[in-house]
Image (tube, rainbow, N blue to C red; front, top):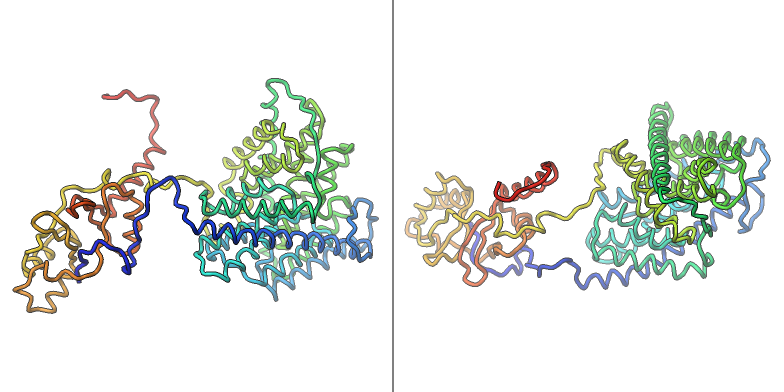
Length: 594
């Protein structure tokens, strides 16, 4: 059957034309923003509940008290229970993962990314319930983790579940999933800007008003609730003594390189240990208990390495520490974190990275000019930016955590240097390597779609082989059988496009027979004809090809309907080739006319 001459796309599955502009947002943005208010509140509530569960579990396990008073593990006395508690916690998590949901394993961010990329941004109620419980057990029994990874997973699950009550697209569900994650992170750390940046750099895989604004709404909602639920002010108030001479930013960048090397080493060791666990002749359900054994043995050496360690972060910034104690803390924290995380238990990576980077920076600060806390903060941001490949998030996160906005320049130098080091050393980050090992490819480089930048008139074929509308069917069949193209436009004598005809039509006409007296114009159906205009962007043609399955789209004059060109799949490849040449061709200078 021929594809015919109607210009309207109503009821045909052909996407309507959109008004060109810098952005593609429409009024559904307002609906998503309103939904984000609800999701932001839910993410904040989940964060409040998670922190209370961690505190309650910690007090029950280590102090035998059923209350919500925060206590440090610094003065725990070595005992057999220090080894037994993490083992029992790991066993409980293994059972929950085996018989509840395997999605609770790990630190949560790779699982959120996977749900976004391949799961249609759908997460199950089991995850929303079991992830905070398993994380509270893991951290409360001594696991060297933070609460941010679990709350990103839990907040994301809340946003996803809420979205599934409505008729939304996968992209809109993704927006609400990430909005819940950003709200949870904001509630935990009081860092709304960093939470939004983390969403952009790590979870959204785009920068569009459609996603950015609802995520910002959710983060601001969480920031509004936070003073009531968690208190005011930065989590780690700190005013650095800026000791840098005019060339001091080079020292900051140098520290960033060291942090990048440290990050690369930790990433390699983590996945080497994961491989070792994979080779064990026992079910993965038992791995967290083995990881707990490593945690407990490390706790016998340095009790402060257990648990979240927010007090350790504060001491690295402002406290008076002993070099030998920081070296021991750095070694033990790194070892038990690697062992526990590679075992598949439940917990986050943000707080451990802050401690490991901060300890390295603090030690470097013993020989660098100024306060060691200054270098500790730089080490924290550099480790975060390099390991998670989110340098802007790391800079703003450090500033919002401490409230010291004078640190922006040094933090940027350190984070960018660490980021450069890790992307050159490792093809994948600590987050995406796990996804890659499951057979999925993730790219973290974003750019503008070249098809959105090129007009149809710039790439269309102008000398089009077309068939006249008054051509008899037998002659048309002969042309189609010996012609070079699968599809031909049909035009009137004035050049106005009236339809398309394909080789499949010719085959059907031969089988049907009795069409000797008919012309192409008489066989044109009433179906809508997909057409592009010269001023359309090529992305419009891509949409038409996807919607109709056609490989060649006619281009018509919008006023007269006259055929002026044709755009085929091979022409789209030329656009991609041009973009590739822009990346690869190098020249020192260009002189016009030569």
